[in-house]
Length: 461
Image 1 (tube, helix red, strand yellow):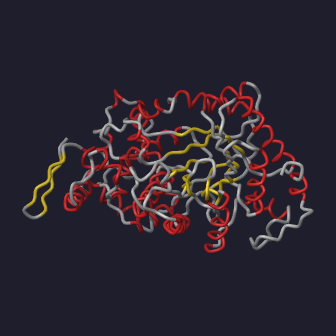
Image 2 (cartoon, helix red, strand yellow):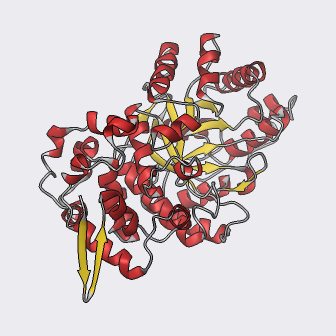
Image 3 (tube, helix red, strand yellow):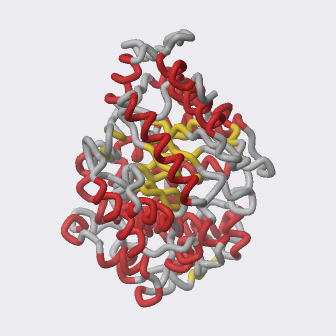
């Protein structure tokens, strides 16, 4: 279905909804690399005016990737909540923006329509919103999940403790793990990116992590970010796995490049459920996404990278995860060129994920060859925390020595909690107080050399 818009004497033609979405996107290097971005700011504004007048119903009738060609499209259409959609089905994209910003559109109302909002609807409305709009609406979206603690509560900022090591050295992992716990990080998950896919070595690491958190009854969950097929094999061998991890993308072809399908993810979820390791809940999946992944796999089908990213959230939502996060600047400047583009993408991702009902965190990060620095990350993480981001990463010194990129540190989480009066997950906060790591006011305490965690690790580090 073609779309047309005139600005003065200039007339713009957009062949279909896919092209209109791409031309309406804020400028970013990945869309120019793909050849789908607007050729001028005037064309971009014409596309946005045109997009604002598109009825939400059109997104159900004109998929950006055909239904018969893509299982992600089929998932989006087949799982659409038509009953809840009746509340917003009469709106255009512009009307939808205005409705989202109304004070009467509360957290409860947003939760009730989350599964009626398709990725393309979320992406479309984000393209005509200012940064403050994305922050305001995302703040109202509350998505709460549970495993051994409660993630996503209002007034909380959770943190993934990421004790990576380039050789999976246990001393290095243990040192980073202690560092993070003593700064109050780790309530989202203690998640390690392993250097190896050797099942025997992965098994040893799983058992070591499980023994540690069981010994001290730490109300959190662990995860090793190896391929989902490895985790299924380890579950079959009786390895103590809390969360099953996988990177996901927004098209069937991109997911095939990761070696996955929706049915494989469903199999992994069932395997994790069979272990019955959750205490407060049974959200057992952990997903990571990132703008540009479909393009980097040559699997974007001419869809702009932000819309592809929102489609990945439909895959994640289907599996009811405990955690999902966008690794927003990780792929590099070919996709998000500088701090401005990374900032906008992070706010878009958080907004779209939360609007669709996902517990969306963000890895606020950049590669060393991007036109960005840590000040840009300070800005973005402060904006996201204001917007109610579910969780951030905790990496020693914000410098991941295994993955070679710049992220956020334990100190950054502490800064945001103190600045905005946010707390860890309540179960984890109680444990921190019990272990004399934090006081009842949320202030960190000085840890003595005889602290039991240090004594336990004395033979390791």
